[in-house]
Length: 151
Length: 151
DNA sequence: CTTAATTAGATTGTATACAATTTAATTTTA
DNA sequence: TAAAATTAAATTGTATACAATCTAATTAAG
Image 1 (cartoon, chains in turn yellow, blue, cyan, green):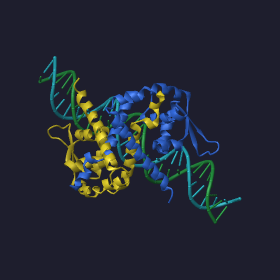
Image 2: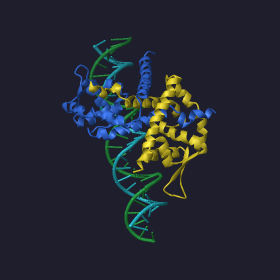
Image 3: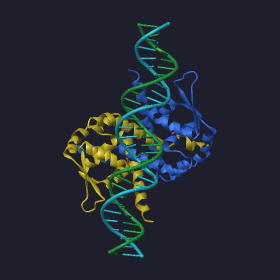
Image 4: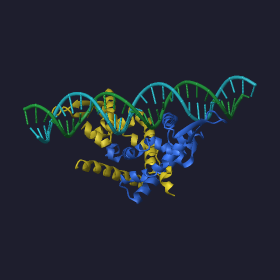
């Protein structure tokens, strides 16, 4: 019965992967209204909270590396939702700033979570649990990173 | 306080998306030993359970469409883990069959879930809950699909 | 029985993802 | 302080993902 571990229905990562993709697919109609993909939306979520952020920090928040972020940020810049600028104190560093246009779409974006939420049949109890469990896992992943620089 | 809905930490999809990616990244070292990517591994999980499957059904099981599956299956065919064949009864249909070589790697693959599991700090209670909640959500997504053909 | 739908896969185009490498700037060290 | 190490982004190469379209085969309708 050791074969059980390889059954699709016993996997923990697969439902995570499938659920994530299916929900992101349901974001699409709402996000089209503000001309954003899901990944671009994640960047905007951060900027709607804090106006500006360094690229490296942004990558850490979103679990994305520069290979992913560079082209995404270029697209957001072309849409004039953000501006990119180098630090004067350290020219290696880049800062991303939200523009007025970027701030304006936030008003429309406010309706999105409710719209998408309607597509997901999830009671409050489960939603809370899901949220806590996933954030617990992510927290341990972040901790790994912190301690890996010790040796 | 209506802004709360747009805070990254209040999103339900983001931790799903981030967790899924981070865990898949942790599969990589193990999967390299059998020369598979995570998506290719998912296909093999299905075939280790049932030897052969029609492409359409495979796509439904894995929540992947032909645009994704076609190149993935081509790669698995090149590695000689699977073979592709057309139905004689209906030439539109394609069937995927696991090869002997594909069956053989299953033995090595058996160690993978435990290896990856070690990277994830998750107690049994939470793991069970996570599994149930996600599968409940996926079930409702499948139901949507069934009823959408009614109208 | 013939034309009009439907269906399964493949193809095309766009957008991620991420490992590995490169580049340029800044720090650290000998 | 000059060379070595480190750091932040960008670049390159490979592999998904998915919407939209296309193609060929099959079925349904009139």
